[in-house]
Image 1 (cartoon, rainbow, N blue to C red):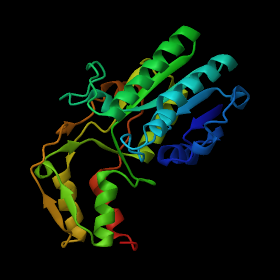
Image 2 (tube, rainbow, N blue to C red):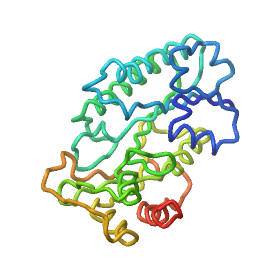
Image 3 (cartoon, one colour):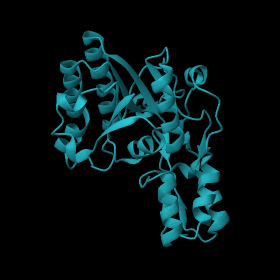
Length: 272
């Protein structure tokens, strides 16, 4: 099988390339604009895992749109022109907004611009692929950590502990997130490439929540002097945990890497 990975040098793209034994056409950020239908020659499945989580949309909206809906639209048209048979789009739980239960049947009401852009990408994928006979799936990732992560709260805690900096944690640390390691995400996606699930939309998460307060308590096991200020700023999404029944029906059983175990290991490493 031959895969094309869009966003191949990001955190998830790098992990996908590391785990797969299939041939991979790697398309990175610098190659997006030059992508042509010829690059899709022989490709069986495109995994669209490109996302710009670094650029503030309030400062550089053109860049954010270019790496979001514009890239997705160009990719879809190239796939249609070349007759590429299947697309896997990696989306985000941000499409659910502040829904108390993140089930795939939950109406999507994103409350952030990034969530709205993810949902627009999903809609583009659905509309174009249905019209042009391209097989497609959308996978909504919950809170990714691990690998080359530099942006999650987990990465921020590790950096603060190692660099002796202070952190501010909102909602008194009560907010809960479904943290899933990038290695587990890549393993699931590569399994789905082979399994061809019966669903169009699937959540990728562990199905359990961990509070930011628990993350801080775990970090302080290794760094008792970690400076943290807990404040009352409300969290627009206080609880975000995946409903994973679809995932469980079409993947093998696995023991997920637990965020607290991973945090302990990172903070006990020589680099800390």
